[in-house]
Length: 364
Ligand code: FAD
Ligand code: UDP
Image 1 (spheres, rainbow, N blue to C red):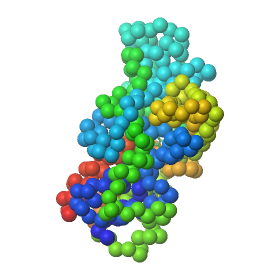
Image 2: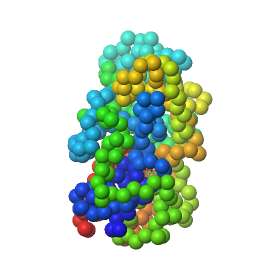
Image 3: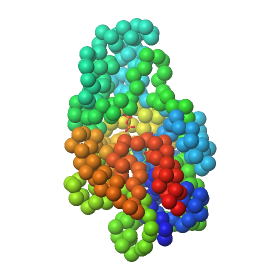
Image 4: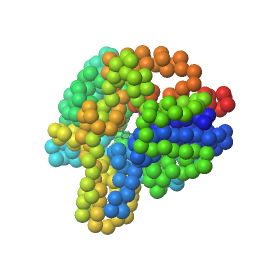
């Protein structure tokens, strides 16, 4: 076998698809879980499509990524809206004019919102943390009500200890745009993410072995190039110590109700344990009567590895691994876990397509 891929997530599948369809070569994918798709895996229960690893909405400004994935799925025209439950009041996230109006009973417009923010934001010369991002953009009360406890719970540490990039994912807007994402292309795959993934690897040249840790399998086979998309510290047997990944536990239930909440996701910044509730029918626009499925997300350090942990200690430790990675001759690293980066799906695909072009096709 020339190519072996570890991990059947979006990175592994994209690279496998390219190798099989563009190079006409055989690929073996080894996957630890009992399904393909990695964190975007979805499945049906009681006729309702449920995303096993939390809400996933496709959004991108990368035309090349949109066009690539469109080869494997049609899209439902979905725009994501999130409300945050602050003491029983539901206010739009991210922060926009409507958030302030709902939160404080105001009637601001663009000009008066700018004035309000000017009066409330804090003067911070150099943004060093995620806390600074909110204090500088919107001030302490907004920080306390919407960000402080959510972030503490999500990451197990204060936003003051987290890299600014974490909260910078959330925009601050001086308009009435209540969409969660502003990207040019956004939507949900018409038949779900798993179906899209199945189509990506619908080629006899691609073989998938499930329920298998690659370390148990690799010693018995020969290969020329290994593409690794699992956790990087595990690959190197933790030789520089463990990298921290924040984990989530996903708890879903099917309810005998038509509808549970107003929008697809409601955040609970001040609930002691879970961060948000997703109602899948609102994302997938499924028309199922009398039933709906919801999911709560409980963060912790045990559970599904979800997020690289963006504190200086672990970013530095990752650099030690990175030096080794750069010296590998027949191993290519891709994806969120191996590159220890907080990538959305679109960047995972973009990166995988680039890896194929520059490191695989070129050397073929
Ligand atoms: P993964 O999907 O993690 O795939 C890696 C695979 O490797 C896994 O299947 C794993 O089981 C396998 N593996 C690991 N170790 C081994 C081993 N030892 N042997 C064999 N196999 C192994 N992105 C968006 O664009 N929009 C969203 O709305 C969005 N929402 C998200 C919500 C949550 C809660 C999370 C956690 C992420 C979200 N993302 C979202 C990001 C998205 O999930 C990722 O970008 C994408 O799934 C990463 O794909 P990947 O292939 O890099 O990693
Ligand atoms: N966040 C917050 N309050 C919210 C939503 C998000 O404090 O209501 C913070 C939190 O630290 C989170 C980060 O902003 O990790 C990025 O949010 P996003 O929704 O992009 O995270 P995702 O769920 O996509 O990882």
